[in-house]
Image (cartoon, rainbow, N blue to C red; front, side, top):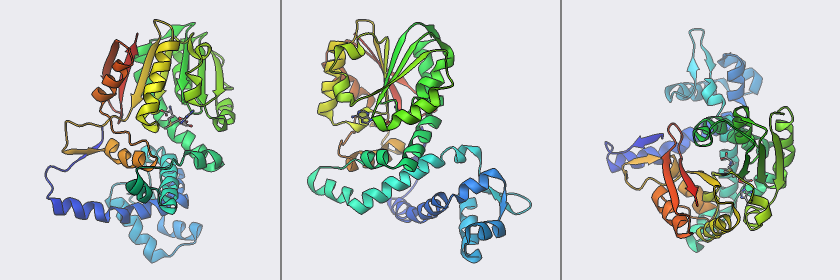
Length: 333
Ligand SMILES: C[S@@+](CC[C@H](N)C(=O)[O-])C[C@H]1O[C@@H](n2cnc3c(N)ncnc32)[C@H](O)[C@@H]1O
């Protein structure tokens, strides 16, 4: 898990660091929105070429480029040309979504409202209605899904003739990444209808297994026994943090009622590490998102395990997701 060890910093050093962090964020935001980072990935590009291609001021953009080099986000080669590594190129869709979301929350004063009233407002509806942002959202999920699939495969194992439902599976990337290890399986994504066209584009080339998309609200979907009683595995990846506690509890009551005896639930989420207070990590940043969107998710892996056990599931195991920011819960009746 990526984290920033603040143990060796004085409070004033930490304060100044966070206070000033927006300045670099603003540069990242400008470069992302104008697609300057994308241009740096295709070929290394000189200051003069950037200035010409994007109609910018040479003096100011030169300072920004040097800062980005110093922050280790881009590099400059011996011919004074700038480039970004593939790892950062893969994060650009995430950057686009984060920047869009940040600006939307700012315009709508959601954090302010949440602090005054406890009520938040999710940006998901606007993302779903904005084609470009939705595409970036899908790409951002897809990039993380490949690695996640390899970890989930350890629980599922290569198989034939099984039924897997990915609830909140977005555009199907996780199931697609699992698909080469599966044969004659039924692989179903449940998500909002806006994802369906992008899902269909992606799965059209895969014929090893039967893919399906069900456009439904999670809360309603799990209420219907016929929707889930054939599932051997149900995946809920990065979903619980989008739901208030009461809804999470109802979902697990329904999952308990309506799944078959040997169905295995695989949960992946950004649980909060409450033991190591000194390490500030990605999940700590996400807490602010969850205040903004009003779910106030702030459970550790063990706290979520206890909630699920209260909903009758006797077998709940915790597993680390090495190399990823979140962690797993494996649940069986
Ligand atoms: C954070 S993304 C996670 C996507 C994917 N499972 C992953 O881990 O990369 C949350 C997904 O849940 C979907 N979602 C959120 N609330 C939902 C609801 N009430 N019903 C159906 N889908 C929902 C969103 O559309 C989105 O695709």
